[in-house]
Amino acid sequence: MSTLEQLKEQIRKALPDLDVVIGWEQGYDAMHATPLFIRTEEDIDRLIWSPLCVHSLGTYLTGLTKTPNVRKVGLVVKGCDSRAIVQLTQERMIPRENIVLFGVGCTGCLSHARLEYKVEQGGHYVEDMHSITFNGDKVEVAVNGDVESFDFDTVCLEKCLTCRFPNAIATEHFAGEQVPVAPKCEKAPSLEAFEKLSLEERFAFWQDQMRRCVRCYACRNTCPMCVCRDHCISTSRNPHWVSQETSSAENFMFQMIHTMHLAGRCIECGECQRACPVDLPIMLFRRTMVHAMKDTFGYISGADPEATPPLLTFKVEEDNIKERGW
Image (cartoon, rainbow, N blue to C red; front, side, top):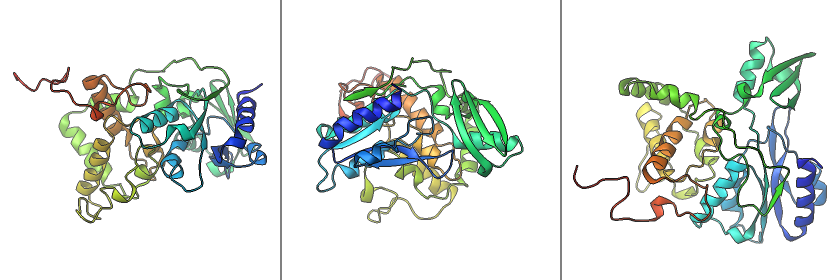
């Protein structure tokens, strides 16, 4: 039985006790999947599982679990998605007892931007693409009667190259086989290149990038860890922390606050960067903070359901922070 068929069977058995199960279905074209809200057995037939399933569905949970008449919610999760559930549970943002996780092992997700670039390099328009076939380490794209083949590593999301959590954790159900933990590289290539820049070059880089930010807040809205809603600092008028002016300085201010807000919380799902309409390299901010939290507190967000996030504890003397004797 395939992973998808096993997943469908698990959902079919559990559905009578759930109000809704959220998974993915095929979107409006060959390249896109879209969230699927399963409420009946007929809905299960539309469920898909493939590298197209990029969305972190945990984004829906903080709102859905507070909705009247919604008692219990099911969610299909990859490794990174399940880390968001663990982290939100540790922060008591969601009632874990009202959530049922259907886990899968993930071998990587498709980057639409990288695939579009590849297709257009071959002289085609991505709108003319008929189908995508995932065949082991290869991605085959049928476009205008031709079949283009690419190495999956060249068209997957960058986060997948360094992934150490391909299998969903702390789940009630798990479909298919466990995927071997085999990151392609230790550090994201973009972060490695960025860290070679001088401080002046880094500042100039961000000044240039922040000029392009349109402050649409897609990065915030798609983040499963952004739960402040009406109290978000970007929309607060009392106090008025961030203006509506879209200058580099104001945009930079917002992104830095967002990054600090995710200290010890970011689970590196990469949804912020994927959702950005102008392709800002937002994960450079997030990964820098993730590495700082790991180096300082030895903590990886959402990796251990039994752990306590460092910013929810207090020590007079932190192991790696020397406040005296400098």
